[in-house]
Image 1: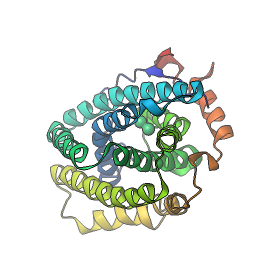
Image 2 (image 1 turned 30 degrees about the vertical axis):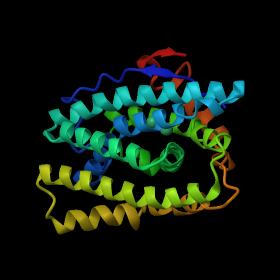
Image 3 (image 1 turned 30 degrees about the horizontal axis):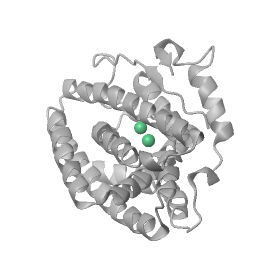
Image 4 (image 1 turned 45 degrees about the horizontal axis):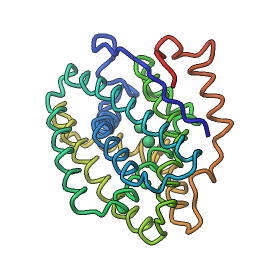
Length: 279
Ligand SMILES: [Fe+2]
Ligand SMILES: [Fe+2]
């Protein structure tokens, strides 16, 4: 898999991005805003956990993939940081504090978990991003909910998460990482991730003054888990991770990614103008 580092610049402008940019719905928008707040620090954690195992990256192929993975995650961090600044302009003054708290939390995680378990947590979270990414690239309903002013950011990120979905996993295997650790860390990571995401989401909802509106919750949770059930649709892919022989590449996304590479960065691609450099 070719994993290029694409330096894109979305130059997001708070005056042209609507505050409720996802489905005109404050619940869904704050859900994705919360996710964006987790990205820069989270992705820094992913990169570090892979770098800690560079001694096990011994083939030129894996070496090139790791380089691509690090480059892509660095670019995601840069653009999501810019997006998170836009959130401040949208009235979420709490955003920088959330990122600071997360940094403190991840510092603690680095102390508590061994390097190999940190890498297993990265594999788990990379599986999450790969599932969300594939679903965004495949499901037009999910894409159409995102306002065109920020759709490019999410599609570019989705394309690259899908491109590098197997890198951390392959480094984990090269480092001798086993099934039991991978599966148990996935369970732990799932619980911690949903707790952290829910806390940040609730914080953003409180800022918007919508935290105690039952109808907002019912509608939002209904859309995520019942219809169209954006998260429920991911359950089979999530469970596949627990098979002892699981590998991220068993879900073949080659054709899907080639199509989106053309849609976004081809000669007529939607994001061609925002692309500054490919390395
Ligand atoms: Fe990323
Ligand atoms: Fe990633």
